[in-house]
Amino acid sequence: MPKLARKHSVMMSTRAIAAQVILQVLDQGKSLSTLIPDTQHQVKTQDLPLLQEICFGVCRVLPRLELIIKQLVDKPLKGKTRIVHCLLLVGLYQLLYTRIPAHAAVDEVVNATSGLKVERFRGLVNGVLRRFLREQDELLLKVDKHWHTLHPDWFINRLKKAYPNWREIIEANNQKPPMWLRVNQQKNTTETYRTLLAEQGIEAEGAENPCALRLLQPVAVSQLPAFYDGAVSVQDVNAQWSGLLLAPKNGEWILDACAAPGGKTTHILEQAPQAQVVALDVEPTRLKRVHENLARMQQHALVLCGDATQPAQWLKQISESAVQFDRILLDAPCSATGVIRRHPDIKWLRQESDITALVALQKQILQALWSVLKPNGILLYATCSVLPEENALQIEQFLTNHLDAKLEPLPFNAVEGSVGYQFLPTENGGDGFYYVKLRKVVS
Image 1: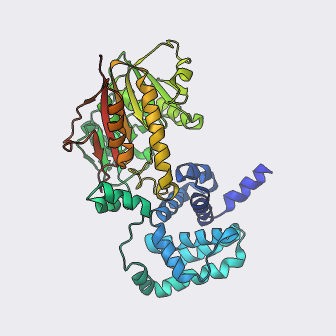
Image 2: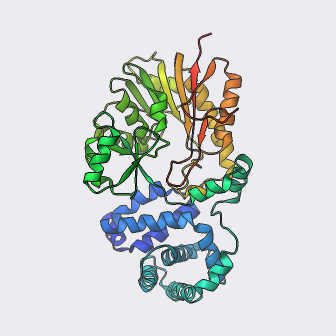
Image 3: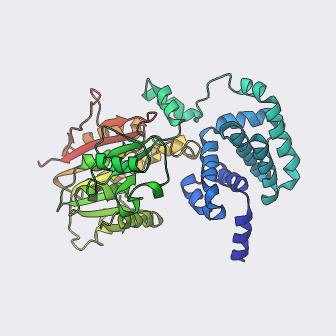
């Protein structure tokens, strides 16, 4: 039976699969980063970019599409008919944001009703999309009379409170993200690799970060010179600061806490190949990616599955169980509100109530890992959040409660009176990241 079911799913159209994925994001709280890999075997290789474009795109502009549907559908499509609603989202996204000819886009979405077993709604889907095409200018005038943030209200309110330039953050979040590379300095200098890219007709620009290159046009990793030999990794420019700020040294015991998918682990080993690196993550399934990244980079680390709040449990797996770490990179679990443009589904998956729980978890991990840091050791705290509660306010409280913690300077133009450094997402720049560097002082 599983083989037959799989055969049927392979025959389902890309639009039908996209509608199913979007339904699972909106109604079941599943993430695109999980769903897309799980469904990509169902589409032809050449159709995978279209599947990704539709799913990520719908999540990026969801409120605008929802408003259009309200103008076109008299009765909300709920319950078992929600899949039809998601199919309309797919159709409208294609008509508004892709270059697919309108007649082809409509026909494909209408035909997708068969694969989804909602053929009785074929006429409704066809009618709604064709009416949109007829009345597009008038409908968009109504829908777009006010500026769309395309973000949930709770998040907008928090941004307004924290940042005078909150609109710039929103605008950056609504863009497609640039593709950044991190050049492995063990293999090439950044400029040498840029030359290798140019020889392949791939244009790239440098940045303040010495390892980073931004591609003017994204490409598949298979087109990157020596990618599978570990010459380069795909990583946002601001995420790349984690390895540089940690400043690892050969021979040191270094913990990469919350390590999956392993990009930061490999960066540590690029800088200090002889370091004793422990890559820890609580999710066993995500550790597979850590192993894959280490293998591609031809590197070795001790990869452990464990809870960062309970170091005594996983330290038993290390031969030197009494080990304390010279350096700890804590890329803490967070709201991920700094990487919305890469993961637009975060806007609809994250709830305001999640923030309090995340702040509590971060505090717990910080305190637990501080206990396994050597005297005079360094802990680099990082998040991909833009919310002060998870960042500067979290660290201010930690410093108040830990008199043996001292702030170390960061190589950025720090805002006066601030704790650590907050990167905000910028168009053609990096994502939102927060960093603070703490030293455990000897009393």
